Length: 307
Image (cartoon, rainbow, N blue to C red; front, side):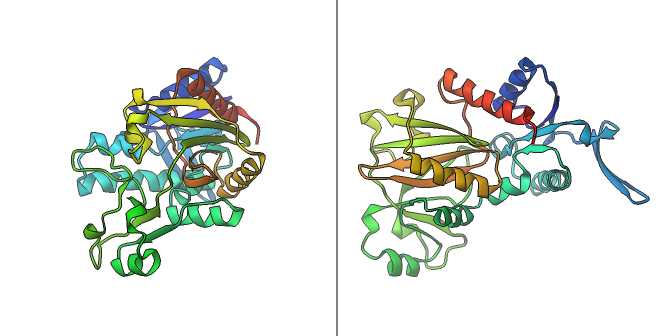
């Protein structure tokens, strides 16, 4: 069994996958496609076409693991036009490889990029019957006034995609500031009903396996909106038992998404479970070692499974 790992050399998740695959007696090739693609080519001649790696067909590999490493890319580099152009060309090339090859990808690039889109995530959640907080995506005050009206004191805001401050640190969910939303904004933002949480869940789904993790934060941090912005030592993680009806809906969502792996964020109040988002490249190494190792092993077993 041969597995090709595509991503950044700085990505510890790729390193964990590589180590586990080797323990499973797999041949593993790991390459940093964001730094060097010279070993890859797409070759066409007289009616035949093939992707190549070091002068052999890419079909030599049984499966490919790829992580969208936008976080590592933007932390390490300046946002020059030339740099962003090069990264986009890399993605364009491997997007074609993902679409035109028959081996298992975790995740298929088309599915991964599609499911990073928040409106598509929400539309699919509606299709399968997942409950969500009341949500508005807009850049205009008139929509906020018309749809959300006098509920402004109970709203949060967050970026549609991955957002970064000027110092390269990620931005997190925040209290909605009506005064900062201009009459005609350059870009839209997500404005959402705030749920008074009892806890939050990160639910990992690999194929049809579900690993739900409950995230509890210390009482001194309960007013902070986004658990990812809270100091690691103020968070507690534990396995969680999901209702069977929610498991069924989540698996239906996962199947329709086209993803093999995803991390789903949920918020829980006294009454219900609320879907927040789907993360096709969601991290897991921040979890306690036992849980993180279980997820790593589940991904590796999915890579070596016949499909």
